[in-house]
Amino acid sequence: MTLAFLNGEPALADALRALALANYGHFTSMQVRDGAIQGRDLHIQRLEDATRALFGTSLDGGAALRQAAHALESAGLRDASVRITVFSMHFDYRDPARAVVPDVLVTLSPPSAAEKPALRVKTYPFVRPLPQFKHVGTFPLFHYRRQALADGFDDALFVDPAGQVVEGSIWNLGLWDGETVTWPEGPALRGTAERLLQVALARGGVSQRSVPVRQGDLARFQAAFACNASGLQPVVAVDAVAWGADTALMARLAGALDALRWDPLV
Image (cartoon, rainbow, N blue to C red):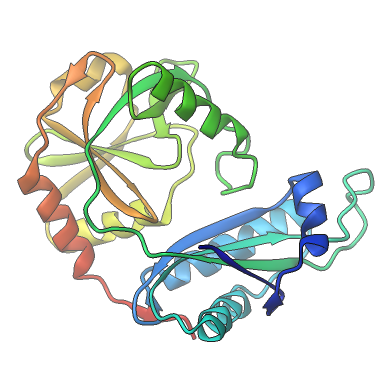
């Protein structure tokens, strides 16, 4: 069951009409465990930067996290999947220069399971508009995921016009050659999970690099994985390129993430 709170109060359907009809806003997602999250500063920065870019106004990201903490307390929860969406009930896309006050929607869902199945993914030519922001324009992401399922795969991986793999439907891709983790460069959302994992691997002395990766380069890697706010998943195939599930690699990645600090929401 998903619970929703708008500006600190239980959300009513009428108040969400603007988000449903205009579909203009942005969000961040996180796993909360015992009232704490990883990457608190990253979530605050994402909320504040995207609000400034999409609405031309400021948002106190720390205050948004306090609303999430209040929602959890109201629901009697210490563990949950939390999404914070920023939009405006009074935003008029016909008059974007008009000053608006951002509204904050907090939704609570059951926490993500630690163990996730391996993914077989199919590539599609697509680059998200404004990929640097985690915005609510998710229609094409789920369209291509649905297409991948119809084609006999588990998810979609996007390829830019230059033939470079850039990101999955709602996740970032990491590639492993036995010594180094490669993060494909390109027009993609740089997720908080990816950024946290980069910090964790650096602390553990694991070599990393960010470079363009073309579809034809995939076969030279030994393993791959997906990461997002819900956790890590092995990627065992991209189109006709197949790998085994590298359990040692996945355990190493999970261990590196587990070693990072968890900060209280407030």
